[in-house]
Image (cartoon, rainbow over all chains, first blue to last red; front, side):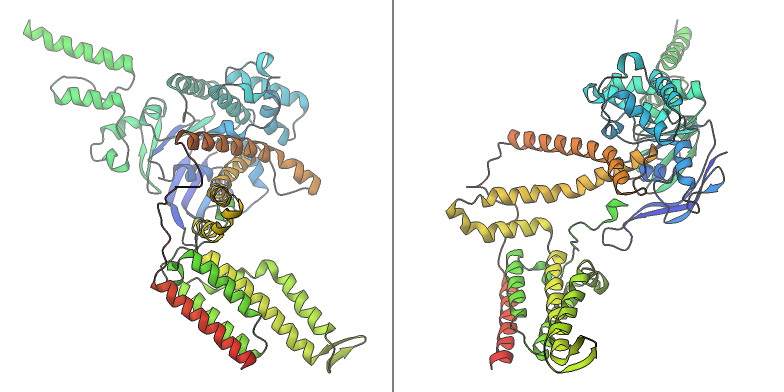
Length: 290
Length: 265
């Protein structure tokens, strides 16, 4: 089953001088097992959008359906939906509160009313997935970890719910390049290992260009593009800089090389592929000269 | 959710009332409030009411929102009016057993309630039309004579300003942590009092941690900029008396004169 948004609009603080329209007439379907990147400039409405996916925000207009159930109609449905759609907020390490890492990760499963054995088993596997084995870290305080580790504990706290969809809002914000790579690597492993759908929100094109199978570009509360990343980068009609975004570094490098007369494939995104393509293009160019 | 709460209920605007110097607004509000007690007959209350209506209309704040500010105090209003109605001796109008409403009681009840309503409306008008920062600034200036007797007025005002500055930030933070915990199945809205209190722990612990972190960061930032309070500080926005404040002063003086004349004249 899938998450369906129909004509969703959302306005912050309606009917006051501070009212602000954050989403305008959004239509979107998210299927299980997808890897979606949502990208947009600050204030484009991407965080507001993802908070609709598990009923944390109610649309001002429109309908959100998870597995065919209208979130607005049934309040009882919300808790079940929140278990199925896991949500990792920006700076998730700020939500840690328990004395030990084990207890903090166990908070979600315990709220689901699971047996102690089941809770322990879920905590163990969730911590394992983020690379913090429970035997070593379980009894430590979460507040004595490094920033990146705290974030991984917080992510484990959501994974322990065993959701079908995992929404991550700027999971790499404020991390150093190494911490960022680690987080993304774990997200990829999680995606391949569990088959859960991943929705990744970011304003950094580099993050999603390589990983996401489907990309949503948001601007001023609307979805401007919905499709494969390579299509977005090839579509010269879409002026990304108008949305406050830029092409991935690799794409702009290859495009520049192409415009200077080097025959390279500008659809590549992985650094190693790009290097190979440039090399072979250079060799091709050299042969007739010899 | 939480962020939908109006902050300090300030309504930005461009009216005459908005543009008054915050110091004069505080002073005139105090004068108005004391002049309420000069009114003893219905004419006096009418004059006060008309003056207040003019102010509200000029400020351009939706009447419903202004009236909403009475809501939290309605119990006190009903109680005051009721006690005056039943407890004032005089000619009984209606009586049921030992209780009776007298003519004097009715009049006094209505007048007392009207006084309270005027008082509430005037002070909320002040907060509706003045930003919290401007208010603290004005309070600092008005209290500055107390510096002579070693009251740390500037420091107190600075503390108030910082506290006000962080109200929206902490509200936003609360909202985010609440949502994050709700996404993990936390429930903040059901159960008995004890259970609800216990359910607040996942919200309060992170909130306190973040408040302390912010306080620490702010202290470091102020230290790094060599902040020293008190003497020789200049301001970005100087408060200035203008012809508007003179005009408002004349108006309020006129009001007091009329009320005085109605009472003693």
